[in-house]
Each structure stands twice: as structure tokens, then as C-alpha cells.
Length: 631
Image (cartoon, rainbow, N blue to C red; front, side, top):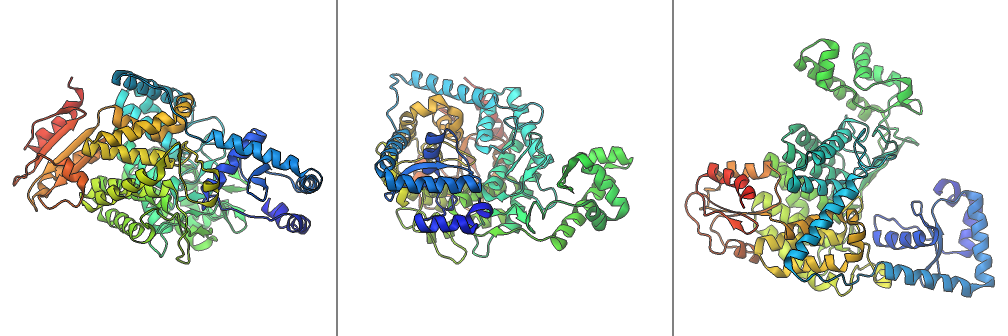
């Protein structure tokens, strides 16, 4: 509509004469998008983008829709002008009805009471199973992923399935996850040359992407691949997770030290122009011999072209290429690497680069910090630790004013005056992950300070507060997880972690209270709250609490045990105490009653079952897996 209508002189003349046109960046103001999208869905039965909403002067929507062809849009504008002149009361009445409907829809209500602890646990486990059934029923067994048309990464749902696999051990869940992960990394969603993932594919088979790259997708996909590595032991997932984070660092890290929000799909006036290859470009980059091999690797055929150009989709891996060419696996790997190196260089040197949206969004940057922390924990590469630490430090020092964390850092350095629950809760969650990766207690101090603000100022009354003007006007919030976790879900996860560290039931009760208030939504469609389900699982089912104590300088002796923890999938909190002063109350609680000796001592609990302190790291490792199965 931008090209067809909003840049059209006739449309512009009508808009500017009779209306006040306002264009909203939905990444910058997601609450405005959520609220008016909900309004349009209630009016029309469907939503989407571009979103066009007509408001009264007091910001209440009275009509809206998505795409309107130019002539239809002009007719609509004239009809609204005429209605405003002839029957303005009708417009205000419609606006009031929509406002009331949206207000009630987004209002938290008190859930059902369950009298016994056993009943609460049974109710949660029913919910846990229902979420799995709802998500699993959408699984595409032929191509992986969910649904039978366009394919989105759906990472919050996949993270829930990973937890379900851990709890239930059902092989079918493992097949769902590995089939989905394999399709994501081997076909068209993945940029095989420079790394990173596109936003979604327009087809069922993961072959034809919408070529936009979003920070949140790449941060969450990296985290998901790390979790699948931990569940399966397959190092390919960790390699691609590392490559994804390296892509983010190489191509999305701005001069101000924050990650940019997105890389456009278009370049040179066409979608995918940077990524697609004409046949002659393959030969220009590789020559005849390697060009022919590349066409075999990527399954080049006239039927696989997108507007006459080719998108790289791996039909053969290194082993398949070895068999096809009759060469050793090592030789095939060298050929593979040479082809991808030359194609990547050709792309960088000869194609117009897409525009990078360099505004930095705090909540998305915190998703990236979590992945940096988890990748450092798995690999020991200090580059990831240092970058995560730097982003977190700058966020706390520059964006947190004691009440909220700013949502946007603009390219010129200006900071937004508004922030959301996703931002402040995201910083708290990233701080907890950074602590568990580095054992630097200042990160838990960050989390503790932020949790106090969240509990006192954000999770109050019968709704969740946000701070942009429209959020205050509506006093409402969207609770469901989308491609990214909601602020409520992130906050609940933070509270569940603090509960696991401290054993303080107040934090557990706050999570339960959130779930109770969401009861009517949660039990109708738990699959829409898949990230929140992780928090509920933390408080209702056993998790690991692992504490390690030793003298300063002796922590290196615990490295083998720590590597075991981070190489395996387990819901957990971990702490290491070297005998120094704690600047975090949480850690003082966690290590209460635990003594420090020269060599490391390992304290391992799983839910309410705890081992006596262990000195031998091999025995401690065995205990990790034994305690879960003990009754």
C-alpha cells in the first residue's frame, strides 16, 4: 500500500485534507500494534499487515482492515468522511463498543480455585499435556515445522517441546524437534553462505523464504539449536548455533555496541536480490567445474527458480557429495567449503547489500544476550561472554532509570522515553543466564534489583502495566507468546528462577497468581503460552539446584563438572561460591549452610531430593543423572 496508495497524489490529497495520517513502527510501539490489531480482528474477524485503522480524536478505533486496493481505499475514505459529517454519533458509538470489547478481552480475571497441592499439580500436568497435544497436532511430519502452508520458526513452541521431551522422554517429541531443526538449518530458511536465518518461508517445504532477517529470530533460533544439541549430543546443532551468533556479530552489531533490529528483504529494488543467483552468476563466481558441482549440491533446476533466479537449498551434505563425486569425505568437505567461500565473496562484492534497520530494541537485544551466555557456557569462547556482558552493562547503565528500561536506542543515540515489560523482564532474564554462565554475582544483583521493580510497578492489580500513551489509555496488555515470548512469560520465568535459587515461596506464588489470573485464556489455548509453560514447569515439577563451593583460584578444578552441566539439557539453576562477599541477597540464600573448602564441593538437589555434599567431580556427575530417577 505504501507504493500503491500512500505515495499516490490523489490518495495523499484526500488523507491530508480530511484526516491526520500517522504511521506507526510496530517494532517501536508493539503495544499500539497489539491493541489496534485486536480491534480490527474483533471488527472484521481477521488481522494482518499492513494494518489500517481509523480512530476518533480520543484514539478509539471505529473501523479498520488490512490491505485495501487503491480504488477501494479511495472509496472507503470518501465514505468515512461522509459518515463523519452526517452521522458522527454512529462513529462514536462504534468506537465505544469496540473499546469495551477490547478492554474486557485483555483484562485479567480471577481463575478457578483448586484446594489441594495435589490438585494444583494435577491441573498443571493436564495443562502441560494439553499444550503438547495442541502444538503437536500442527506438526508437519513430511517437512517438519508446524502447519501446512507457510513455515515460521515458532521458537517458543519448540522450547516448550524440548522441556516436554525432557519430562516425558517420548521419542516422538524428539522426532518432531529434530525434523524441525534439520529442515530449518538445511533448506531455504537458512542462509548457507553468510549465516543467519530468514523470517519465514512462503511454502510448506522450507524452500522459498521471505528474505528479511530479524534479530529476534536469529537470537531465539541459536538458543533453540543449543538446547537441541544438549538433548541429542549432535554437534551439528551447536556448530550452526555458533554460526548464527557469529552472523549476528558480523552483520547486525552496530557501532553503538547494540544489535540492530533487522536486515531488509529487498535490495536493488527486488526482494531477495542480495541472496538470489542467476545461473551465470554461479559460473562467474566458481568457474565451470565448481559451478556444475554447486548446481548438484543445491539442486539447481528450472523448477526451483524464483523469478528466474536461484536460492541455495542444500540437497546434498558433505557425505552425499562424497558419494556422488566418488571422493573422500575430507576432499568433499574441501570442495564444499571452497564453493561456499567463493559464492559468499561474490555476493558481498557484486550484489547490492540490503538496508539494515539500525535501531536497537532492548527486548530483542536481551534475547541475544541469553544466546551469547548459553553459547559461552557450551563453548568457553570468551568473545561471547564479553559481548553479552558489554551489552548488559550498557543497558543497565544507560537505559534503566530505576522504573523502566527504555525500549529503543535510535541510530543517532537518542533513547526512547517508553519501555515495556518485555524490556525490563528481558534484562532480568539475561542477567540470570549471564550469571549461570560466568558465576559473576553482579549479574544476579542486576536481576534482584529489576525483579523488585517488576513486582512493585508492573505486575499489579487485574492487568499488566505498560508505559506508552496508548497502553495507559487502554490499560491493557497482550499476554500470549508470539514469535517472541511475551513480557508476562519472561517475567514469570525470571520469578521461577529466583524461586529456585532462594526457595522463597513468594516468588512461586507470584507465578501461580499470574497463571491463575490468565486461567480462562491459558486453559483454552495453552499452546499460545508456551514460554509461560516453562516457568510453570519450573515451579510445579522438580528442577536442579546445583551449588559449588571452593577457595578462590581453585574453581578451575570444577571445570569438568561445569562443562557436563552445560553440555546436557536440564532445567536448572547453578551457583559457584569462591568464598568472597556476595553482593546479591539471592546468592546469600542459595549458599546458606554450605561450607567453603580448598577443593570444590558439589551440592546437588533435584526438587526436594538432595545428595550429601560430594567432593569427587565424577561422582557428582553421576549424581546429576541418578537423582532424577530416584524415588
